[in-house]
Amino acid sequence: MDTINNHPTDELLVSYSAASLPLSQALCISVHLENCGECSQKFQRLNQVGSELMLQLKPSPPSPGLKDQLLDQLDSITENAETDRHSPGNTSVPRCLHQFIKTGYEDISWNRLSRDIQSYELCRDQNNAKVELLRIRPGGTSNTHTHMGDEYTVILEGSFSDEAGLYHKGDFLLRDASDQHTPVATLDKYCICLAVTEAPIQLTGFFGRLLNPFIRRSYA
Amino acid sequence: MGQKNSSAERIEQLRDCLARVANERDKAAFSTLFDHYAPLLRAYSLVREPGADLIADELAQEVMIRVWLKAGSYNSQLANINTWIFTLARNCRIDYLRRNGRFVSDIDPTEIFNDIEDESPGPFQLTHQSRLEENIRTGLKKLPREQSDILVKVYLEGKSHQQTSEELKLPLGTVKSRVRLAVKKLKVLVER
Image 1: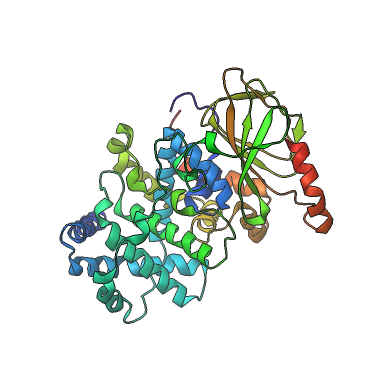
Image 2: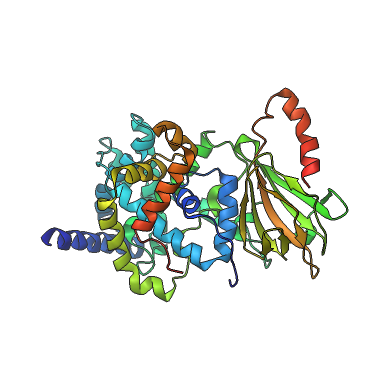
């Protein structure tokens, strides 16, 4: 909970609170909030802003019979969806990632990207944004790279540094296509990050899809 | 002043109803909550999907079902009842969009937007809660139209910054800075 220096911007938190963000970006922010009390407080207040805005709307009366229909159903409604929560176990995996990682990071079948880096793709989001975990070995480095689209990163374990600073567990970073950087994991332990990379906008056609794997490869 | 008191009384009354739903499974109390919130929930749906009456009914119904199921987990120490309802409505909206293929995503949103009642309050939050609510309420009324319009687009219409910038024909940077200015004026942010 301490020493988090890199936070999502206020306008990004607003969109998160409004749920007007792609879920992949929301996932990164959610991991950050689990680690950052300050941003959690902001989030709750931003929810208040949303509720005040909702209260200012002109009320619209429900269809006749909607209430009676609902009242009749109440006794038969049971809370089945709620018991189906992803079981957390005793891992340090953030709650919002339990849907992908059932036990711990060590049980993941990592893919080797380079001598220093392994990856594990969790899923794809809308616009084909790639949601993955990256694991950098202690002292390991990735090639200097730029991004074809925005890249959202939040640190799950360990720490790394680049030209701009040193980042620890919970730190949230947003890099756009103009940023060039060379991340290096610190020497003490593996660094594990959640990374969301937006698909390159200019390469979405047939040839783009053919080229994407090569771009991905060079990215890590 | 009189109006302010009556609105505080109304909140008190609604909180009381919610407690009776939680503790006694009181359907009359639930009915009062329905009468108060269902029209607002419909409005919340209609602002995103104008003219879609059935969807609006469905969202109102879905949220009220969650109110019935989750009344026991509401903690008035942590959140204003209106804020609690808003978070339920927002989460139902995401579920709806996902179920209907409007959010094409492999991500389950259930665990992303943590229920507000799961969070533990800081001492700061408890002591300043009502003052913050007041700041936000009066602040929203005083915001310049160009800022409040953008908040409406983002919070109620569910628009991204990019969509907002296209619709209002404003540069993306302007949209972001107006959002930032607006929340600053609402004194939402923690002083560092």
